[in-house]
Length: 584
Image (cartoon, rainbow, N blue to C red; front, side, top):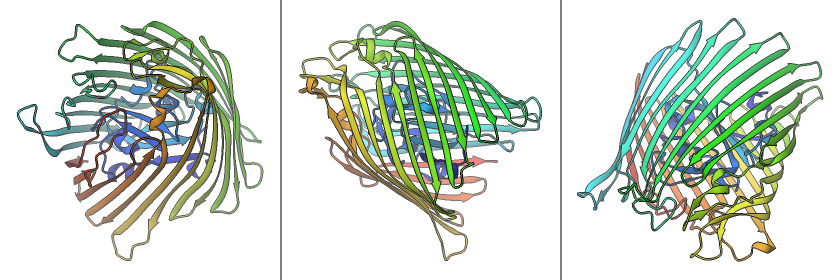
């Protein structure tokens, strides 16, 4: 059951279309890196590859959705953001912080990210071209400049019988250091066809092919000559039916295909090559009933996951879920939402995830909010069965992760300011981390007894009054403090692959100014991890608009900071990009 943002009791952050167009970013990965509480660990520019986590969780504990459709990759969450969606096709990105199992089921252990694509109100076409460089030279390849370029295009049609949109993109470049060249292609379609005044068929389809040099991405320093090709297909069909004034029904079927080809030696495909094919079919039915006491939501979900792999093997599993939710505003000043998700997995049996959200309106502007609930994650096929000796081996004895989460906060909203301040506590059992006792052994996942995390969060957006005509100011600020504790008396002495990368402090700030045809956006972020060196990054966009053309100049990593976000991969230094957009 969908709620307006002002009615939400959860800690939810939204990147809207206006922010997407203003930020110095051209990929989903880069957009998410500016969101408080979101830890985006990139392994290259232009959205090449990245792991995303929320509030100190692991990248496997964050669920990715597209228009509410789960895009789980049963092989590994390393591929979760390999999505066929150009940024020009996105309407907004919703980030739910905290377990969302009561709504979405398994694998939304620490949060969920829902990417909502644009539904056209009018017919039109658009084009977007850009190119960029850090002006450093590739000494191993004729001393040419490292560079990248891209094009996005789109077409929309809106009529009485339906709305349709088609977007595509191509990006390529020689990277920013040795063996980081990339090439990716995307195509995405979305359509709604009305069957009568209240009902409609919804269609979605997309394909992405992403190839990139993976120097240092997963097995440094020996993987200097590695390359990876990742392909994803998404398809979905649904039907929204208003049966009467009180009851609505929404069945939907979705399919995801994933192909992952990792080549440890890119020039010799006869050895050290891993190929994986995954198929996921998801069927769901959701219903909402409006009653005098409140709204009741009920849903049923069935999912089948299959993998065929050269070094994981052939495996399959089934998952079944049933959820119910009740929402009411009948108690004065109180907004209540409660429910539970009952899950059965063919490998891990039964689980139940209850949860409750409360909001109490202190006034028209102030609201107290609280949330408590449970989350769950089932190990990926990589966690369980991978055999990449001497680098990584799986553990078929792994137990699933579970967590209990409680959060309280205070919200404020008026016509200029929206702010949220909160504190949360998360107690996770059987936390999974990849570990080893010495550098001579392969990495292997193990369950740790307990992971406790305390966190303080603040976020706010403010529209600044300007004394000048035709000038607008917008500013945003966020801060996240995390205090993770890991306990396991039986597993002392292990070296951790991912725990050491967890955030402890994170701050983001952005300011956007528009004056007539000119616009400027300045954005900065500070990340401090448990063991890695802290870093401060600044980005900027300078824009000029002559309708229907927009011209912009981006400068990313303005201060040319040397930093690492994931593994041993150094990120690009200062990078300049020039772009032109056209739309009618």
